Length: 308
Image (cartoon, rainbow, N blue to C red; front, side):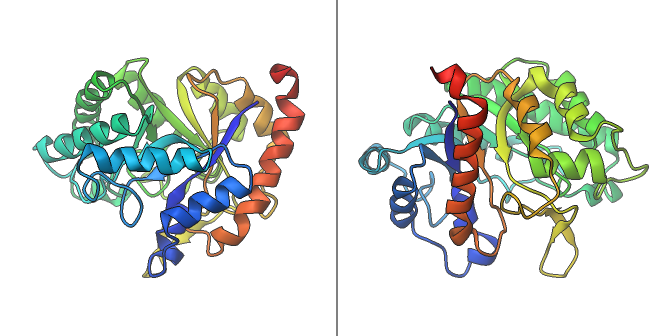
């Protein structure tokens, strides 16, 4: 059986930014719905390294989670204020990453998520070769720091960030070249990258075999999984422009989970978590139970034998 979690950021950013759901309320609801845990968006108003700088505060979060019979499936580190591609100085990014590694370790979290921070339009300012060198050099350093803190590092590729083609995922993995570093495979992002080719600079790159082919390309190097639906579109930013993949509740999009789940089930992870991601969904709070019911059915259908 897979342990099921959900990203807490669904209740704090986008449509919820002006009225976020507090952490205790999130924990109580997830516990009542039978979730095994949550994936922590490590930024206000939920627990984060800046608001909880000392050990006693962090221990209190652990006890709060335990009181609800929940565990952490991972940490989405708050690195979006940092510069990664448009600077030669990776020091501030690495310092912020290190701070988040300490935070994750203190909370007993095993994996830390990153992305390339800046949108694909960054190549209008920084040439792709330079950008790739800066990202991979920084990721290699961060991966060593993650290992020093007992964490695996997972990179989430998506239309909204630079290096969003299928071949980019392979190139990034080859360049970092360490088993502790892998990709976070999100089914909505996977669709928008491999099938739609959304926001790809230059020549559009998609795969004839779609997500199934993409998962097979990456299978041995996927180290974290997010599941959610897609409707072939991107979430819009405040200016009405495409930003990153829409994340729809299961059954409201076009994804063929009958094909995707068996492929993802073959992925050998170092843990047993699968995470629901309702990022930017306008009624994430209301859709949570629907998504949990879907994942319960996935567990019953695909993992019941392995659990017996």
